[in-house]
Amino acid sequence: MSYLGLDIGTTGCKAGIFDEAGRLLALAYREYPLLDPQAGWAELDSQRVCSDCRDAIREASSQCPRDPVRALGISCQGEAFTPIGTQGEMLGNGMVSSDARAIALVRSFSESFGRQRLYEITGHTPHPMFSLFKMLWLRDAQPDVWRRMSRLLCFEDLFQQQLGLEPAISWPLAGRTMLFDVRRHAWSEEILQAMDLDPSRLARPVPSGTIVGRLSQAAAASIGLQEGVAIVAGGHDQPCGALGAGVVQPGVAMYASGTVECICPAFDRPQFDPQLMESNLCTYDYTLPGMYTTVLFSLTGGNLLRWFRDQWAASEVAEAQRRGVDPYTLILEAMAGEPSDLLVLPYFTPSGTPHFDAELPGAILGLRLQTTRGQVLRALIEGVALEMRLNLDILDRAGLRTEQLRAIGGGAKNRALVQLKADVLGRPITTLAVSEASCLGAAMLACAADRAASPQDLVATWVAPQGTVDPDAGRARRYNDLFARYRRLYPAMKHLWNDMQPEP
Image 1 (cartoon, one colour):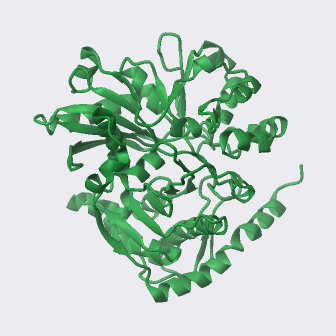
Image 2 (cartoon, rainbow, N blue to C red):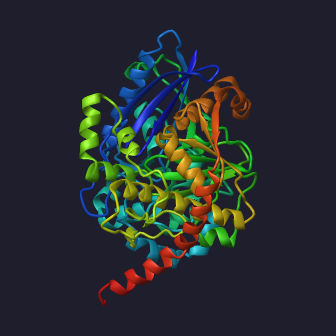
Image 3 (cartoon, rainbow, N blue to C red):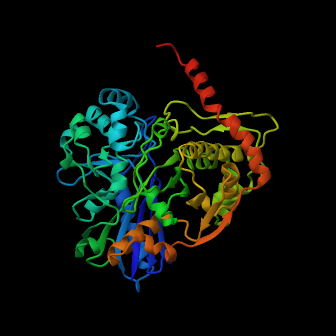
């Protein structure tokens, strides 16, 4: 028998099947395009996403016919939702995290409702990424859709509905909507009333690891599984990935290097703190009962490496196609080997924590005629890593120090990238045998639910550390000096940018 973890991401979905000991039996991936119909918009075709999820599950299950799947857990990107009509039809695309169209509504709603009150209820501070503000935009900009829709579903609960189940949303994913009371573990009546949204239009919140239904014969056949397979609530992809990385106690955190660069620790209690609020470091449910988490993230993250690939690395892409290898492998081979003299503000999308700045653009400082392409590439990656260090420094000062990082995601597969980040952060980074930890975490929750066991009990056998990359002392000292300069970069650039804007 086996367990399936489905990870519904921003740029693609993955279906991973694991045996009872956590060994990966099959992995299938489907990439889908990120749509940008207007400046500041970022959408997914929700119909395409669900179709690709089905295809990925069918492909993965076909690879291990002798190990039938008993339960399926779902890991899911945060914030994105889809309006659903009365007949189950999709009335629009899903607006993903980096979509900034609701920026004007953030200030007006937060001022009328109260920024402090929003934090006290949801554990989050306002940002246009959150479902709350995107829903307000939908209500005001597309009132016909708002009137016609019967449900607003995130991708976890949307896919459940597509499988014929009554949709349920995991507590960690519900927390990312900014509609959820993270102390009471229920939709906030106060917030919903302020935005004129009936709670019946949202999925039922349940703890991670809850069996939300079982597949009918027809639904099972549509994705290549057997009738009766349990569908299990997983969670937001970051805490799912953290569980898959073996994060089950304070002081350890997952470092995910993907489309979004993210660090996700675990706490034994909710962390409501003025310093954390000021730095936009949230608190919400973890994938384990009674535990909480936060996310330190750069929305630009891996998008910056993709941008470099598309704009600067045509030769490596062509060579990779000729040789049948990953283009990023060739691109990163050309990266400068030593710290650069450049300083990058990695705000090529709206920023993440700690500033939540959707207006200030990115910048590369220190360019000379002698600057090489490899140095620019390294500086771009350093910029994201320095932003993550800025976040970790805030946690340290709040008494929540993370001593060990566990790397997952595409960036965890490249030793040079992991070494660079260990050097910048000044902390050891452990790599894992399975880098697709979000699939693994979702499958662990599915297995634990099927066996009526605790996910913590599976960590010892399911999570296999490969090795630890320690900071290089010399480069770490150079990055300490660079970090001192980086801390001054945001306020200086913000001041300059504001001065450059035309008078109202």
